[in-house]
Length: 320
Image (cartoon, rainbow, N blue to C red; front, top):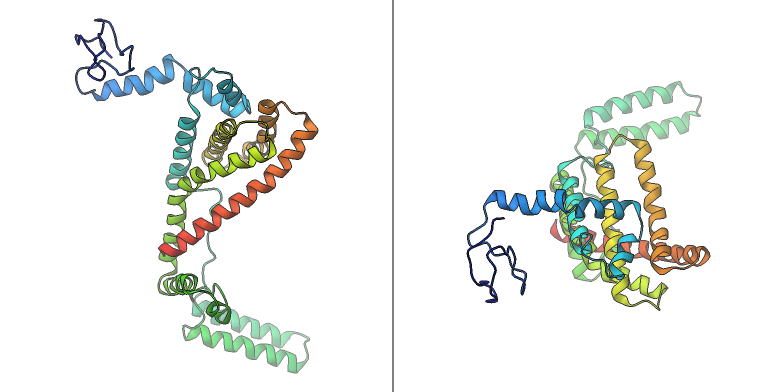
C-alpha cells in the first residue's frame, strides 16, 4: 500500500502525516482510491502470511500446543496470533468446502438394489441348492416357495426401490401432524426418486452444519463453565472457539490425507488427547481432576453433538 497525500482521515477527520498508512485515531487505512486486486493480494496474503507470520505461528500453536493460544489470549498477548473467531471461521470454511470438493473418507455408498433379472437368477440358484441339500422335503419345499414368491415380486417390480419405512403406520398415526406429515412426505419422495431425495437430505444437512456448530458453541462453553465454575464464562467461550478451530483443522487434514492410514490414526488419537491437554494447560488442574472432568465433558459433548445431529436431520427431512 502506498503513501497518501490526504491531509485528514475521511472516517474520523484526524490529521494525517504524509507517510501515514493508517489513521492513528480510528485505524482506517489512508488509501484514497479503490484498492486494486494486487493491493488486496499484498495486504491479505503476502504481507499477512509471509511478513508478519501470524498465520503460520497460529496454525502451529493451534495444532501442536493444546490450550496455548487460549492461555496467550487470556494473558493479554492477542496481536501475536490470529484471533480465535477468525481461526474458527477460516478452518470451518475450508473443512466444509473440502467435503464438497473432495471425496469424503466417511462417505458410505448405499448398496445397489438388485434388478428383477438378477433376483430371478439368484432365486433359481437357491432352488437348485435346496434340491441338492439334505433338508427334509417339507422344509425345502417351504423355503423354495418363499424364494419363488420373492422372485415373482421382483419380476413384477414390487419390493424394489421402495420408499423406506421410517416408522410403523400405527405408531405414525399417533404423532402430531407437524411430525407425521414430514415423515410421509419423506417416504413419498424416496419412493419417487431415492437418489434425488437422499442427495437433497445430505445437501441440506451439510449446508446447515456450519451454522449448527456456531450455535452449539455457547452450549459447549456452558459445559466448560459447569465443570470449571470458578472461571468466567468468556474464558470458556474463548477456549471453545480454539478447541473447535483445532478440530476443524484436524478434520480438514483427515479429508486431505486420505490414503495415509498411519497419519489418520495419529490425528484421531491426537484429537482425543488434545482437549485433555488444553484443559490442563488453561485451567492448571492436576491430572486426576483433568481426566475426571474431561470424561464428563466428552459424554456431555457427545450428547450435544447428538442433539445437533437430530436437528440437522429434522431440517434435512423438512427440505426433502
